Length: 407
Ligand SMILES: Cc1ncc(COP(=O)(O)O)c(C=O)c1O
Image (cartoon, rainbow, N blue to C red; front, top):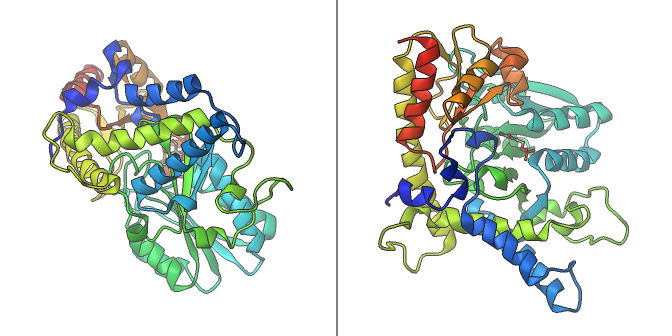
């Protein structure tokens, strides 16, 4: 499969401002197809769902197409796709609903590697019912989250294991399939935060063993909409707080109030954009393939493209003077978390911004991880590669850092 990064970049109007957008881990830019899909939905006229007129039927179609698209992206079932405003909001929603079934005899397991949105909602839900919280620890030297520790952490009382598919700070991709295996062996559920992983790798929630898989479209070239994907049969066993007249059906009963219809048209366009990346600018080697097959092939091409850029970034940074890179896990998303000497990460980000390089600074809500790494809320600088980045983005980052680090 090919990957034509110039052709990809031409699809993104925002990249024309000339900045090196290495802030994708906090949210990507959107291609023109997504912008058009959202604008076209509004232009065509959309109504609320379930009406007897054409504009309402257009919204019905937009929602069902978006569920099918997200299901294709992660290998799920359309009827198991629950939409919400953000992964954080959905984690709270799901933790509130699932914890109704927990008691003081129960336990949950969270990890220090996770973004706080896959930690705090579970701790707070456990606290309300008096369930015990156990912690999976990282190895601070490597940034790995060893799966073997779950053999001790998980037991007959465990109801839920929450774990990330990739750290949004240091990139570590833990062995989720093994961790989920420990959970399933005792009848517990595994809630996987796929927000950082989804833009970088082919995702198969069955292979991961994810009972719930959270993803946010704004991390993969879509609008600010999130989804949790689960088996509809599992969702049937869970009851959230809901309004009396709203649908009791799955997945509708988990969706509070009116969905953002135009944005959901953008979600479908974003999935189609990802599905097309592997054949862009080349003869269509996948003619006749399903969208799911195209996604798997395209995301494999994305993974290879990003891995080459990440290697360039890590090699370049290793040659600089006083730079500390956090985490060196064997399997990593292409996200670098580093400090330059003792310089405040915000000052580094400001310096890079003056060079037209967008990076994040701080703990990036990897709050527990930053405590373990001794970084606290000042955190570090985060440069995240996504599929529209190229060599020149990385080289500009390296020259900007070199000015501060020496070497
Ligand atoms: C790994 C990870 N999980 C969860 C979130 C929270 O996502 P949302 O902004 O959709 O709540 C983020 C956002 O940065 C993230 O990177």
